[in-house]
Image (cartoon, rainbow, N blue to C red; front, side, top):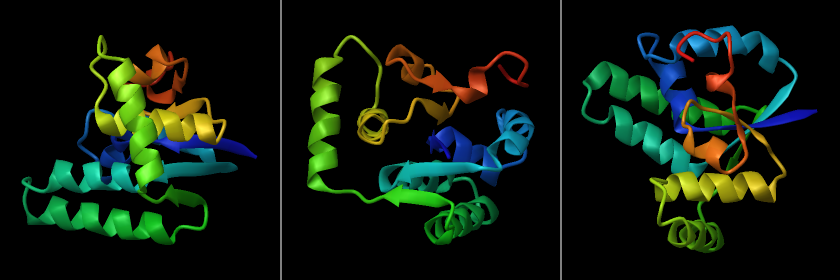
Amino acid sequence: MRKVFADTVFWVAAANPKDQWAHALRELEPTLAETRILTTDEILVELLSHFSGLGSFLRQKAADIARAVLEDPNVTVVPQNRDSFLRGLSLYESRSDKGYSLVDCISMETMRQHAIAEVLTADHHFTQEGSVALFLQPGLAGA
């Protein structure tokens, strides 16, 4: 079964149909039918942070999505822990020439641990580490 990593960009597009990447998400959805999605607690924290100041409707929608993700049998949410933090911190320190956030680094290390090359994102930082950013593929809206 195909496995992909879902970055914050994916969950934001899922929560907000007006997001710049929402159309790309809709175009990709049919290709994800037989796909196992992996994400992290840190990604869900970023999702909730993104919507925290955008009004009660979007804030609640983000919370609903986070809860649904945690209960979805087709999504694995890797919990935060000290080891993942330290692996991410090591990558963060070793890429001082990049603009990677700590959450990006934790995500990249999680993808390596689970042998995942494809990521549901438009964040080019993942491509700099050799991953395929699915939202940036030719032919997708917004790409």
